[in-house]
Amino acid sequence: MTLVIAFIGKQSAVMAGDMREIAFGGDGSCIEELERELYSGSIISDNDLKARAAEIGVTIRVRDDKAKVLQQDGVLIGEVTETEGAAIRRKRLYATAGSYAIAEVTDSRLRVTQRGRASNFVVLGNAITKQTANQCIQGMWEGGTIQDAMRLIMLTMQIAASVTASVSRTFILVHTDLAANLSDAIDQDSRK
Image (cartoon, rainbow, N blue to C red):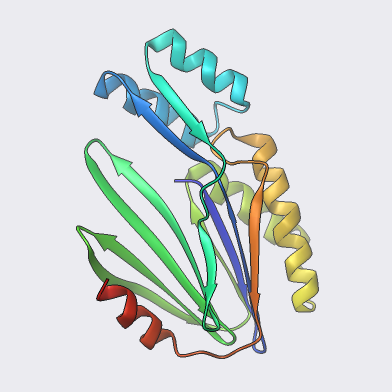
């Protein structure tokens, strides 16, 4: 799980997601230990991650080309993946001008867990990325335009990449001025 951030305004919405995907191999308990350290913020750089993985006998494959956010018919969609042992759970954020929804996808079943309205930042990620993003938002957001929110999101993505190896330095930013129907997008996804 890495980092997806969105700002939902009354007239538009913006979302960013990093592009890192890490595959782990080896003993399950060692993988869990490495993930716990990575997602809690004790592993900061890519070199630290490689060294710690080698130290405990875990193989890792790091990719920085996974698109976690997209814009589809005026709806911004972002997704993060959580693994617990063999279980894989995905959290998906849907945003459009004026509203958002968060859904969990388990075994291809999609269930909406939260809905909200405009003037909100929403953060999906692991413990360290959520903590970093929330500190940035609370410390720097004083209200403003969608461009101000966009600048804050970009800065937050850069800061998160500097404090944890779980986030890539590259990210994708998407934007919409449409107030699309979230229920239609969610229904469409649940049939895939």
